[in-house]
Amino acid sequence: MRALRILLIIAVVLGGVFVAVDRAAVYFAESEAEGRVTFGEAEAGSTDVSIKGFPFLTQVTGRELDRVDVTVKDVRADAAGRTVRISEIRAQLREVTLGAGYTSATASRATGTAVISYAALTEAADEGVTVAYGGDGKVKVTGSVQIPLLGKTLTRSVLSTVTLVDGDTVKVHADEVPGEGIPGLEDLVRKKTDFERGIGGLPEGLALEKIEVAPGGLEISMSGADIHLAG
Image: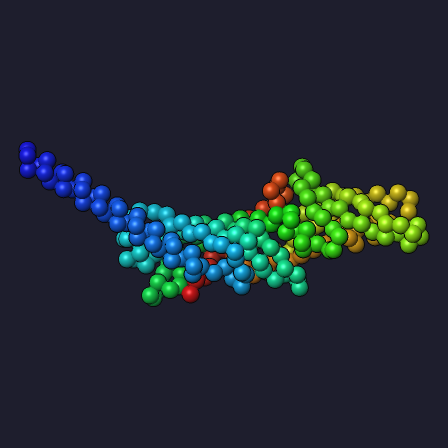
């Protein structure tokens, strides 16, 4: 019995050591990956990597990780001549294969969400236009237009619907623009408040699928296959 107790104690100690070593290896790998992960041609302000699954050492020996969660903040991607800042990209990567020397990685499958804040959407809009949350799945767009016939400038706010067009373009379109009996007013307002902006710079193979208007910004769901992450 005494020998059995000793063996059990040794097993527990060794198990604890293995877990500690495994977790330390995960921490080191996550820190290294954060400096190497790239997300297409976009420039990112910061990247956070979380490797899931246990044990990690077995996975890395086989050069395939079950799941890796990546959060990329402040992503700047060129879109139709403008800079569109994506506030945050949250991606869940499955079956991540590590390349030779662990310098590259490719995810077999990926799902996630890209968030564009209203401040970023305002930056992408025309000069003098602001975009904010309008409630009930709408955005509120405010802009000023000059009325030559009246010799004055009018500021108008409209509630707009946001849609995803062709899988890579955000379209903002006012539901209704009161003309107020002023000839051409609606067209002038729409030239300011209605706009489309493409989203570029995401990795090849990752497609945008659905857009939702939330209090914190536009949330765009995405998914893809064979996503190249680093290297």
